[in-house]
Image (cartoon, rainbow, N blue to C red):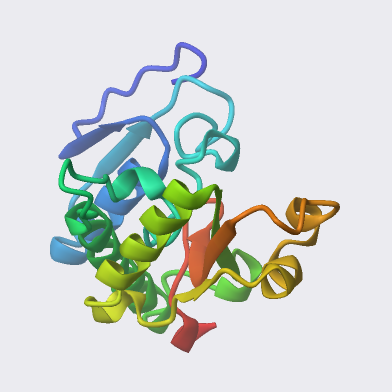
Length: 195
């Protein structure tokens, strides 16, 4: 909370920090019980300037399409995908909530703060290429990752990421995956059907 103002009123709910979590919880509580009084306290001069800020990564919602650390390689060489699938499922629920907010005119103009961008993973070296191929094959078992493309073709990879592929040794073993993705900026977003 900035300044030293004090409120003498009694409130039902106090939320600490004016980031995405407090904003989401506040909206959910008001939807469930519209007569609740809620106060949000923030120590900074602006909302969403810490963990929710885009520069701090938490400002982007994602579907776990390109985070290789969410798909660890097990001792037997297989790739575990449970965490990536769980995060993708959670993000789908978030998109449903944001869609609800847009449909009910709680959030206006979603096209100003939600954008579709591709998520790309890139690896080089035989061992890493095998890992990415195994990751891709295992993720294909989930419908949430059906839009993902795998490629070892340097020309195709160059069309996805020209700077990464620029002047790279053509004999080097490389691979990549690409998937469309949704991210949020600021405090709100929605899904493709509402944009």
